[in-house]
Length: 289
Image 1 (cartoon, rainbow, N blue to C red):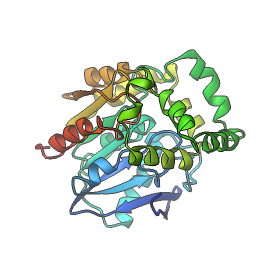
Image 2 (cartoon, helix red, strand yellow; image 1 turned 135 degrees about the vertical axis):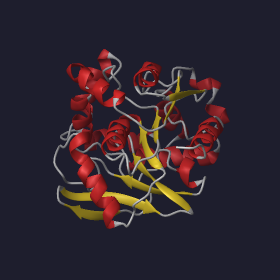
Image 3 (cartoon, rainbow, N blue to C red; image 1 turned 90 degrees about the vertical axis):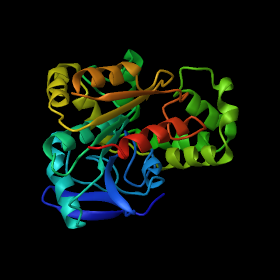
Image 4 (spheres, helix red, strand yellow; image 1 turned 180 degrees about the vertical axis):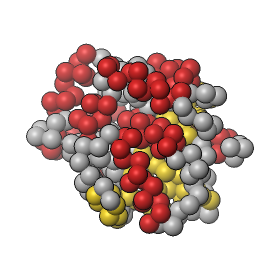
């Protein structure tokens, strides 16, 4: 887990993880259940020499701004950059549910965000969760009242290889027997660290509220107003987020580029297939913005 700090903004305290690099930093917005301390893909950018400014979004980690929606949280993002002396970035990056914040940041702070990257993101115009079971089960298991018990159970489960295999297998549409053996010990250790740091707080329920079907028109409006170059990456094998979201982003965000990955699950930055995501990031970040 990386060391974080809390910045006092006009909206309240915001937890960030800032790792300077030789190149301008990306503004990194983790997915559901993740805080600024969790590497859920920002290693793809540090390996390219970029700094990373990761945020704990509303309801996660030590960010305490109330249940703000993504558009309402943008001023706090800007204040954090100002506090850290960041007046130039390499772009905004969203992972999974973090895509909402990345989209709003790119839309509202175009002078600060020259590029946008959406990795396995949802919701798009398409509502999320993708299945009725997730829609019914998610708000209960990851509610503020029960989420602590849920993650304690997960932590016990992943102590064994069999338990970890079960967890990551649930994030794949392909049989886990076909790819589990391709993961190195380091991949497994990084997955364990991720799951052990996961907490839902009030953030996941807040994310689900923004993903409702009746807000599809608003999400489409935001997507059509993105003016910077945009990279979308996703895998058809991802059981965490349907590929339909990536296709929707590509249709609605002007000039967006879709790179389809062969990654067997939602954790696109782990396993040998992470090289595909790395190559896509490298090519996009060195292109003219």
